[in-house]
Image (cartoon, one colour):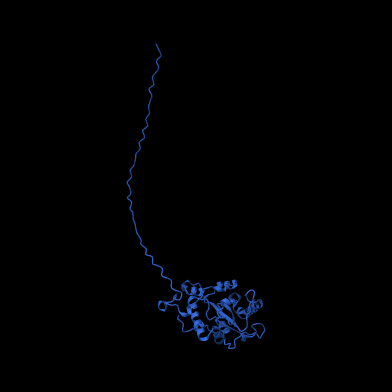
Length: 269
């Protein structure tokens, strides 16, 4: 008898993967398109400087005689729209004087226009601004440069006079701009072009006595224009600005003076 070997039948395991796909209902997509049309208006052509800030009925096709042959600075100011002009604050005025950037003091566009027309007419009538200033504004028929007869340059009150600046700069309306006119020379240092030290000390003392003592040091500044910036070169003068001073004080020291800009007649505007 032989041995019997049991027979093993192999087992096969089959794994079946079933994938189920769920089909979800689609949400309809709504596309909305909106077209906006913007019409850009063309920028208006800039007006020539002599027409800027004027109403249409006052604009002339040609430049008036009193606005011809101007400096680039003046024509640029005239061509600035009133709403674009920056009025200087008291703090800015103090800063310009301290830094000696006096060229930054400018008149408002329409004020400059009126000033230029006034000066044009004045020269035709009087021959020069100096002749008018000495005789009409200052009442110094003799004119000329004299030495102070009292103690110091300002010792004789007959040799200096305080008046309003007739055509003030574009500054805060609370600032009063005065001019101190003198019969005597305010000498510059030939090397620096600035006031001599002793002359500056004399002016400092005068300003302290007349203005600062009444208005306060924080409300008082003074300066003397360089030669190139002077509008009246034949008579010595320097400028004083006061912030919000007592009107009665101003009437007293100017003897009731009224600036010509408030009195000028026969001007275009």
